[in-house]
Amino acid sequence: MLTLKGKSVFSGISIGPLALFHRNTISTAVRPIESVEVELARFQKAREEAMSQLKDLYVKAVDKVGEEQAAVFEVHQMMLDDDDYVEGIETRIRDERMNAEAAVDQTAQELAEMFRSMEDAYMQARAADVLDISRRVEQQLSGGPGIDFSNYDQVIIAADDLAPSETLQLDTDKILGFVTSAGSTNSHTAILARTLGIAAVVSTGTQLHNDVDGMMAVIDGTTGDVYINPDEETLALMKKKQKEEELRLTALEQVRGVPTVTKDGKKINLFANIGNPGNLPQVLANDAEGIGLFRSEFLYLESSNYPTEDQQFEAYKQAAEALEGKTVVIRTLDIGADKKVDYFDLDPEENPAMGMRAIRICLSRVDLFKTQLRALLRASAFGKIAIMFPMIISVWEVQQSKKILDEVRRELDAKGIAYDKDMEVGIMVETPAAAVMSEELAKEVDFFSIGSNDLTQYTLAIDRQQTKLDTFFDPHHPAVLKLIQMTIENGHKAGIWVGICGELGADLTLTETFLRMGVDELSVSPPSVLPLREKVRSLDLSK
Amino acid sequence: MKEFEFVVTDPQGIHARPAGLLVKEAKKFESNISVFKGARKGDLKKIFTVMALGVKQGESIKVQVEGADEEQAASAVEAFLKENF
Image (tube, rainbow over all chains, first blue to last red; front, top):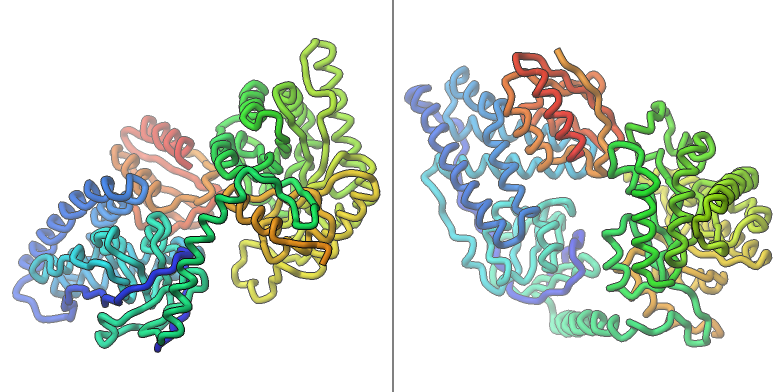
């Protein structure tokens, strides 16, 4: 048995024979040429041929996987049409008297290298696109298409990496899974596997050869392990796991419509986080008990000017009505840091995460803040809205925000406009300062919602976007957990409820810890709702 | 010459497909259209140079249009950016 470890891109388990992916071999070696004109003409003909293939592929792919996934073939056409690419090849043919195959290959390698050296992982993965279009041209130069990829049937495909066009030419209904030695979780193969729900493990680092062709293999997408020629024990184990995985999905259906309560009777509110009203169907489909975090930024980010009070009112009202009396916690605008909007005219900052953002903008630009508060209050007449202020570090900020809210209430009273007089007002606890000051802050508000993402980043002084810092980053760092515990205790002392709305809330390994701390509410992304409810219902805190 | 600045709000920045569409839009015009990110310059009619700028969310780009139809080109490209990024 051979065990490989890679990165899982879809958490299914598949068992079946391996099929080594055979690519049609092409020689791109430099060889002497007859004439520059002949090579230029060969290249142009091959390029045109490749272009027309891509047009066909695009049409086919739209049918098969939809426009969004098919768009890669449109991009490929543009790449093939790019002046730098074409000139790079033609210059090599003309100036270095290079054969077309070698000229295409060398130009492609150069561009691929440019992408590989870029900072972000998505762009790095685009090197595969350059190589893919070039391989298509090279294929034409060496005499046209070869193996028909759609013949693979009921197998797990093993390859070094699959080009997007190769993946899409496979008959994916018949493919059990993918395992690739290279590739990234951002590659087209990975994205496609996720879309189609096929078990896939990439980047195993081990190149497979012909001798494994036809061997039995197991892909465990839950761990990223791949077993080739598994022994009976492993095979039995994985078959069991595969069945369990299927059962798990069925089991989740069992916890639909039941309360989120532990075996010993501790009940919590299980809410969902959403980014815009488009997510409302997901909230309902996943049976969330309310919305614990409605990020209002979308209204600002999706607009090219300040959204009007009425535009905001409509969006908030829509959420309040859709939830039919269940709580909808709306966070006031959290622009700034990584969320920028040009019409806000914010000055460039050295350190935007610690700069002009969220409540700091609202308290500096009261008119802007009042517009949002008015829209929120008006919408509160149509359901159960609660509002919370982000990025709080001091009691003063909360008092000031409440004062402005009171002014808006009085304005509405004067005009006889209805709103919910009992609307709850809370704050995000997402700075170490707020957690440390939670005893004082609790006296000012109706609830706390702990934003674990920012709380972690600010407590550990680690930028979440910096993958190079992964070694130093501990998502369960005791400092963060202590601050959370302290916040919950201080909230309860003042008689207010405390929830968690960051990623930690969905971390099933921490659910028991949070429940023991006494958390009253967890708010997670809609797909995490049912797994979390199942987890809570399996716990017994009396033990 | 026409010139304008634009801050990308799309969470994915200017990535492959929209970059392609942007290039397609730019190619409709005769004018030379350059795009700057800081000191780095790209040609808005060339998909590789646009992608190579690696423009991310929150970053500002400057677009310069020069040529016979610069007026229409600048406003079309600006509208396209606002719509899609």
